[in-house]
Length: 281
Image (cartoon, rainbow, N blue to C red; front, side, top):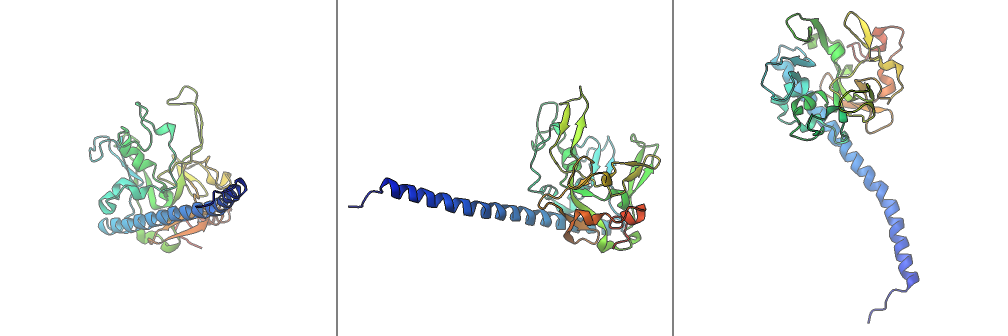
């Protein structure tokens, strides 16, 4: 007959199990994080490839940050905004690659009137969210031209620049992991007032020197915040390392780079934005 465990033996077994769990849990966590990072880099490579396909079909012109046409019914719930991620769907055939597996937080500011959240397929803003809140932001400030347009309800539109105008294409950022948060919501605003801290993705990234829109003002100056501070909308946001962010470069390859290395000397816009404006290192 098998001898029953004594209390001391049982405690020893429990202690061994606890020690093994303490050793293995971080390993499993690291493996899970590594798998998510691999998926995210794969997503960016596919987005980069789709972008090059878009170029070949559009006379080597970069895609716009978005088209705005409230009468366009191509996407039923995009609120008139067809962002770059939706423009690429004819090549990618997959919305999931627009979302990093580590970008999982909901956001009160993108809930619809019925309270449906960011990931609810029945959200009445579904197409808008899929386009505007991708996990990867587009370098629109240098890969697009901001064009005043009296025929548009917005008063302007975006045109893509020619890829042939980019000097160092392999050293020019096209997409990077991004965030639109934190933002402060004024009292009385729906759905909730206060500060929203979830670092959800955003379809654009702003270069270090800011974006000169509406008469040349500098909006959302990223250089005012230390990475990975999300207080500037359109900030690059490293999800897998403290300072390294995954980037899809304008020639289609994907590679991580330190956030601190994305900003050159700030004596001029040209040098501050050297990895954004086509000049390269």
